[in-house]
Length: 359
Image (cartoon, rainbow, N blue to C red; front, side, top):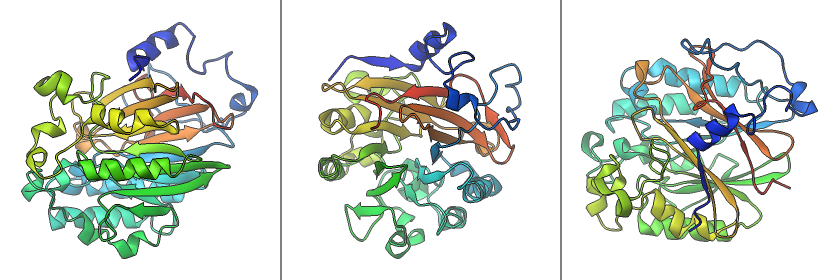
């Protein structure tokens, strides 16, 4: 494993010095020609940076983190998220949507009904993946078992309608899936793995990645990065990192669990085509990131995002991952359709560089 890691603190420190990011005077010509429609900042961000505009010629992956509180108490935020995505799929060239888990809070039929209604807005509009979280399994969402209503409310028949679905570990269940699409000539593969993936899903996913060397790979799973900008690592940190999959009842079931460091060692570090990981789950500020080089020198951006602990379970904020026309720059944004506003602080809005750049 390489020690070449850059956390958000490193990146933010460099950004202050003008060495990272796309500030005034550093922007390439195509970025300066972006849409200049005024964008609203979230309340409290008035003295922070201006929202980054969408750049013509870019394409987008939208990420839905931890909608659990919406399904329990504030469903309109969830509905507005998917309605906005469907309405703006052309404007933002939204190619795919990933859900990062904890779709529900208590794994009850009532809450899955809300999730089903929200996500079905995307059917026939934008393809999506679902990675179930700890609150989506076990009685009352306690993660003592892997029993989940996911497959009763999102069926195989429905999933097969998506042109992006590439395959499933278990052809009768959506617990572990992969998806493929091509955006502006760039082939992308999305892995959506279960909560604390067991050994068998990890072995299956590793084979899927090996069989698609011409695709750039995005890993989504509920628990991977921690809020202190490190991966979940039970061996190194144990209970010092709260909410590690190893501390839940599912860890004692057949097949065990794998945390962030194990996923890195067993899968990501072994391949040169991973470019990003996305996860939710973690509380505190619910944000974390680092960029790590594999032994072969491939840089992987590892990102945590979770708003569930905020007002009304997150006020509808979702993450937009925008791939700019230079095939190298990625804009990360936080937008709420409920507020029609962006979070623009350095932990919610920033730029990344793909290394190597996409050809």
